[in-house]
Length: 201
Image 1 (tube, rainbow, N blue to C red):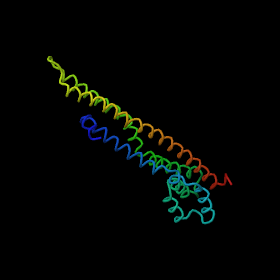
Image 2: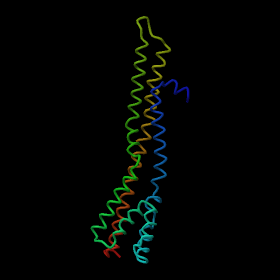
Image 3: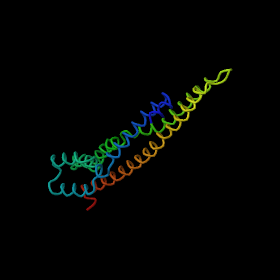
Image 4: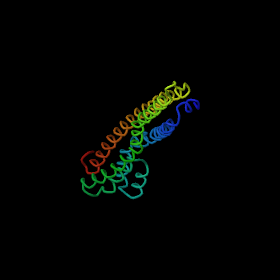
């Protein structure tokens, strides 16, 4: 691996940094975007049951708010349970926007890496080509410099694609997962509003 890095020259270092950041974001998002952590199954039923038994007291709301992102949305609604349907819904929407922002954390960075990595690879290619043409003299070319220029050009192109392709795949994957979780949380929140205001049994 060290020999490849040496052959690729200095343009490979930004790509190595991008690959490390990409892997770190992918691991972090895999851990953070688990459905059991974001929208636990059965939370709506437990929340409604607790509300019917003891009402929307501060202890129950605080416990709910610290349980999960969906719990924070429910807690925002229950704090306004005695208000009108519109006020309760508005409170839920505000909490929902903050939650969506949290779910999308680092995804922009991952998408940027997916877009920039091929360009960094192309930069390395151009630098390698400059070295190749710089090695040409009227009396002939230096084979060692020529070979190094080709290595820089090819390794950087390849490594740029190696970084970009998985980053783009996981960016799309996580975007889809976030969209799915947001839709599920919206549906759960609407059900809570309807149950609290007697529109759903």
